[in-house]
Image (tube, rainbow, N blue to C red):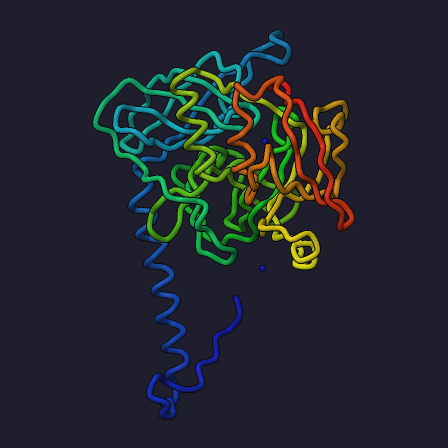
Length: 338
């Protein structure tokens, strides 16, 4: 594991605004903002849980370590989404519900590569958090983070989506792509809690902060979390192929589109290539733009991930890459995830 002062000069009719109206307008805007945050908190907080764990010592030896984090219930029969680093190697897991109950939880599965995990408490009729669509997010959009930092129950913070498509190195050492950056304040213990939009829909799983920086906080998109959770509930782990690269979605340069007559309008900018990885062996370099995988356009990192299933392990694939305004075709053999 940084709002301008609004200055209203006239009203909708174009008539002059009486003295004192700017202050009133600003007050109304702040009241609307506060009301939105309050409604989100009231809607989602009942589904947010405090997670207390005892984990095995490093390398399986030494004394058990105590840790804590957050999570949120996404099915009425007790399935809870959280971060892998919160519950990985857990000996004992306890979930504190919003109604004051503390229940034993079992680990259904965790995936260190995406820092996601699913645990479960054995009870029925629980309040759930509604899952949204993270692909609709835009920079500047209001978001609310809810969690249990330092053990303080159901702490609510608000901010905006600062950026999309970030890459972040996870606890496993692999790069996680398409990460949401936000300035909604997070602290230790917020890990695994929900990042929520103004409609009360979870659009991310809070995962990390950069300290001592202020307002550099990150969340895993809920579209990624939804897919990973389904696999964890089915298999207990995620079997996938890996290329060993990190990247983010960007629009293709218009000059390159015209020069090569491309029908593609987006690709994946390669930001990092792991040593001795399939990507390195294929000849991929930082700065390359990956356009197609086996002839299929790649308009987002998520689309590339969809190709990297268990069936892709050891199977040669073709890549179309833009490098220094030239198109290159490379071959790559995905490896099994570690």
